[in-house]
Amino acid sequence: MVQDIIIKNGKILDGTGNPWFLADIGITEGMITKISPNLRIELDDTIVIDADGLVVSPGFIDIHSHADNSLIYDQKLECLAQQGITTVVVGNCGGSYAPLNPEKDNYFRKANEIKGELPWHTFNEYLDILENQGSSLNVVPLVGFGTVRRSVLEDATRNPSKKELEQMQSYVEEAMEAGAYGISTGLIYHPQTSAKTQEIIECAKIAGNYGGLYFSHMRNEGDYVLEAIKELIEIVEKSGCRSGQISHIKVAGPLNWGKSVEMLQLMEEANDRGLIIRADQYPYKRGMNSLKDSLPEWAKEGGNEAIIQRLQDSKSREQIKEDMEERFNRTKMSWDKIFVASQRTNKWRDIEGLSISEITKKKQSSSEFDIFCEILIDNHANVEQITEYGHEDDLKTLMKSRLTMIGTDGWSVPMGSGKPHPRFYGTYPRILGKYVREEKILRLEQAIRKMTSFPAQTLGLLDRGLIREGMWADIVIFDPDTIIDRATYTDPHQFPDGIHYVIINGEIVVKNKQHTSVKPGKILRRNSP
Image 1 (tube, rainbow, N blue to C red):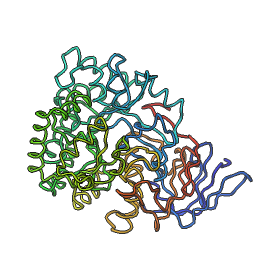
Image 2: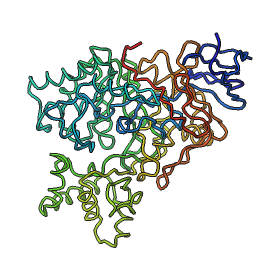
Image 3: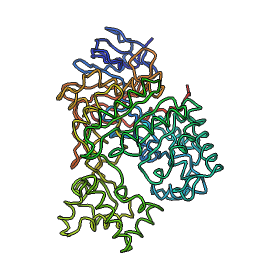
Image 4: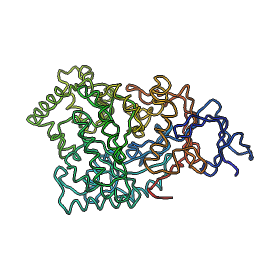
């Protein structure tokens, strides 16, 4: 068979975890059609890539992505593609972009700053739009429990009635029929925090009926992280979901450092008795969410408008302050560990990337709490924060586990916009540079497995994640001696070094740090050919 692209002289790491071998790879019509030494070039217009001295691996599968936050407006997803990602799993943390109740989509439009009517409501309509507009990367969709709950309950802090629960289940079923791979929760986020375990199980049962997966940003990642893992295991076991995925596994807070050993033990015990429990991780000790997530739970009820009203009311504001101080004292959290990543006003433009403590000094204020409140009020509560929570020992312990794969927990952002988490640009190169080459926490073939065949196996992507004849040609070509992340917390908008080519479905998407603007990605609906 005549090849469109031939990759010659590369060290192939096929994704299985085996050591590399030397061979050429032939690609025809988007597929890997030949793996053999010394492939002949039969046509003058065949693209030949000389990978001498470079590693050729399967494309990286980002099993925990929020690329749906940007996909509607940005189909290039450049900061993800530039780090070798070829497939993103979206709809994580309970926050998918569908299904939406047409009568209750106002909250979604406000939260995502969408003006005008939405061109979709069902999950199938949403996937159709993604397919019609195209994408540089492949997309694997999950249905978000939080989105489903918001579509049914007017007051999302209460329990659903039997009829409401059945309506929630019908939304999950429509999503699974449309091609979702499973259901996700974000039980640390309001109002999913109000959902009881049994309610989640009943919704997850629908996904389980379709052989779906259960992904969860668990209810707690600090003081009660072990209890949260037990809840996740219970949900998987009682719902019949094919497997359970602990999203961005971590140990939060100094009082909890060291619990990673017990966490992994719980996971291993569940696997020993026949369940499939896995996890994903990004290689940083800081996380990113919304600044309003630092508020007490009661203060977040009712959405952003209600939050602003409480912050402007002296009595409510004083109670918020007392509750936050109590939590800070109990968990050893402090204002110097909370950083403003991005916000929406010119007034606060110069403070992006700084901690609340640093901002307080910069603005010559005497109260960190008052600065925190002012930033939220001026931005109508739409502010992203980065928080420091972890310890390197736990990070490495979790990374080395056979049950852990890699994910960014990120999305695509415009170059130069705000100070997003550096994981948006550097997750995979950081693993390969810092933790493989420099610190030798993982062997190279182990790391590649965690990025490729392991997530593919978990998702059931039988034609991706490996370099094999007959597989889709999702391929990364990189220099193992130079690959490294360059993005930092203070200067995050930097593409990594060492990645030479990213090929998706047989088309070159990234060549020597340049995005080619092609959109060969596919919307990978569950059970679709």
